[in-house]
Length: 228
Image 1 (cartoon, helix red, strand yellow):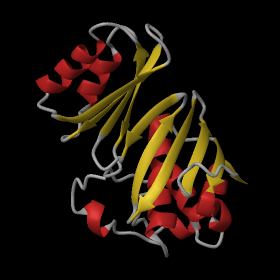
Image 2 (cartoon, one colour; image 1 turned 90 degrees about the vertical axis):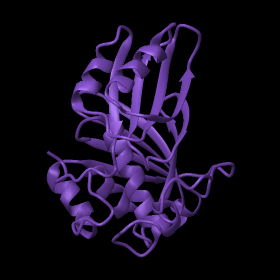
Image 3 (cartoon, one colour; image 1 turned 135 degrees about the vertical axis):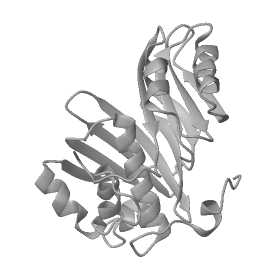
């Protein structure tokens, strides 16, 4: 993998015994929460490989739920995440699954909120680093180290150019972009990793493009107070 910054080498500031099983898991959970775009009311968590074998003993369950509560990896509330989730009304169920072809630290989260739902698959690859490899029906691959836009839209000519022009006008540099689509002229997902954080105005303008269904921003550097 390419190392994008010092975080990729030394790992995050974190609470928990293992960067892979806690910090990485927390970042996957938080990425899923932000991909949903609202506080989750229900989460079905499917774990694979070593995650499935050790998630209780290594605190992976606690870490994932802390991410769903939108906590950073150094948040002092992480040890109490299961209790705090229950008190907030978030229902979480865990399933240990078997699928030998996936990365050993893989989790799939199906989140449901008051408005919508999303399925996110991610892997914890060491040192607190993660790869998000699936969003709903789309194949993706991003680390969430940088601010990352998820733009769900109809596949049509000019769509990518319009998104890029809005970001360029705001002096937001695109470091990496990928597109997956169900079919020609069908549903598509564009993932845009940015060097700068896009502002609310840019998000609104992208959301207003003809054919865009929804826009989500994954920003794991943001400081949050948890479920609102």
